Amino acid sequence: MHELPIRQHIVDRVIARRGRYHLHDRLEAKHTALVVIDMQPTFVAPGSPAEVPESRSIVGNINALARTVRRQGGLVVWVTHANQQVGRGSDWSAFYDYFVAADVRARTIAANAPRPASEALWQEMEAAEGDVHLGKNRYSALAHGSSGLERVLRSAGITHLLIAGTKTNICCESTGRDAMMLDFFPIMVEDCLAALSDEEHRASLETFVQNFGDVRQAGEIEGLLR
Image 1: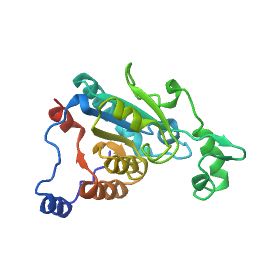
Image 2: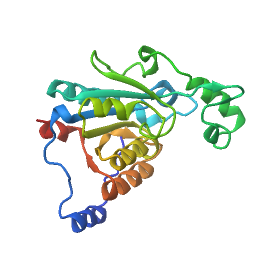
Image 3: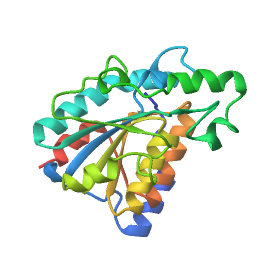
């Protein structure tokens, strides 16, 4: 797991701006969802085309947090990335045509091919009956047309999101930012997130806590849920 904490001058800045550091002292479990992003072989498996090595270190924390959320009556949502092959390209040409080299493109498209829910997650992730499984086709699961996440959350009466998964600064942050834009209350779960470096992880959380939502440790969540 990443070991760089949010720096004190950022904490001080947040407190000076809004009068306190954490936004939420209590979470209503029935209105709370754990949204786990991209914990799938494409990003977790050693040697995969988009491997995030640190993602393997957060598997246990995510599974434990999922058990806590279920036990308290909250919702667990597993979101995995998938893109459709369209002719010689994909349904996300802006990414595949410009942000990855040709030799990486084919491997990445193949790795991100849509799969049944039972095959989409990394093998060590502990999904349970009653969990929701969704695919997305953009960084953010809440970008227009990316997934059915917003519809699921609204239908379930969810107002607060616990964001976990990988990468901290890409898909997780993008989903969290869009959640706040849509009037949800996102919480980035610091020790259930992984990036390619400690510095990128911390930079993402420092930006997020100032402008988009809360940042908490997994161990704090059980005490907040009611």
